Image (cartoon, rainbow, N blue to C red; front, side, top):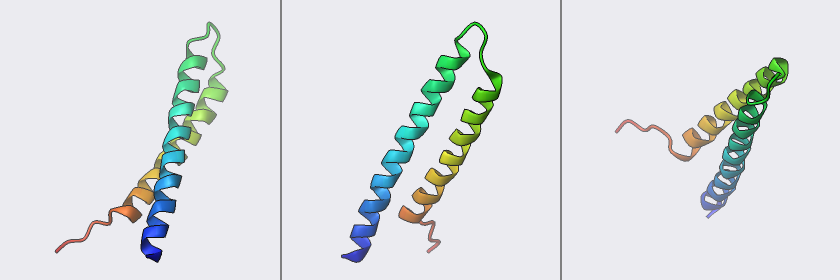
Length: 69
């Protein structure tokens, strides 16, 4: 039961992180489309996206561990 609870918490966190990642992706695309894009801001957003992607991968590994049988 406790495992199911922690899995549901992780899945909720994973959903939030994926939404944040998509939001950052949209922000980068919008800023890139401007005539004079702020390259420093784009670089910061991309680093944040990468950190989110790493956290997403870590949580996915916790939910679906690779077990060699």
